[in-house]
Length: 256
Ligand code: BEZ
Ligand code: FE
Image (cartoon, rainbow, N blue to C red; front, side, top):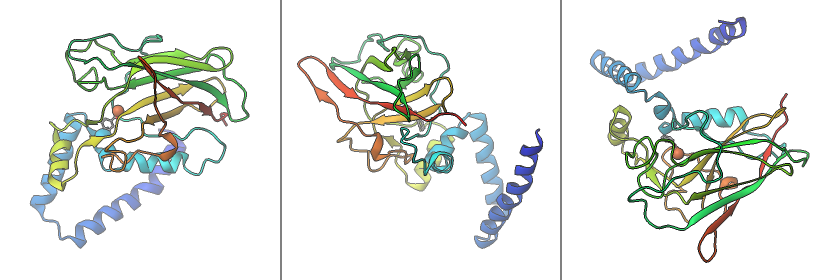
């Protein structure tokens, strides 16, 4: 553990404990209730649902705001990564393969440029995207979909332009079959997220941007279960004869 990690722990942990102790005292939490809380957290760990718990309790949104809020550099707003990212998907311009039951929605072309805050094009920037399909959620939940479906990386051209072919995702529920699902039910919080596409964008000399792209008129824009919708990240979709388009220009902040 580095010295700076140790000093941050020494600074923050006593306050965390004081806050927990204060709540336990105020609510006269019993031994039985405390053991139930510990058992719940143990189960969350065993089910690998700590990121999900952080998300649905809106803690991830809080941390995103603390890390990136107040950025007035003109960079694209960041957003929560969520637990569904998988590393190094293939480089491809069409990020899905057809699968049975996916329906016959028109394809969606998402396009834009990747630039630095000074307006210069970031040639070769890598745009890494992941999303649910038009039916059936993420590839890892939906056995009809080939592994890695609706995931891909796109390299920006010399002028910073990028484009990929996908389909408009639909709203979906976060996983509800594990301990976090039981927690949501117990506190009466619905599990829905508005439709979105996740982005992780990297370019040399620039801070990595993790964000999400949302679409207007979604019934869950105002009540995302993880509270991650930012108005600046909602972009219109244009309908053409046999396809849809959505423009999403991305601005990265120089590192350091
Ligand atoms: C997601 O957007 O992929 C996500 C966020 C929180 C929980 C589960 C999934
Ligand atoms: Fe998602």
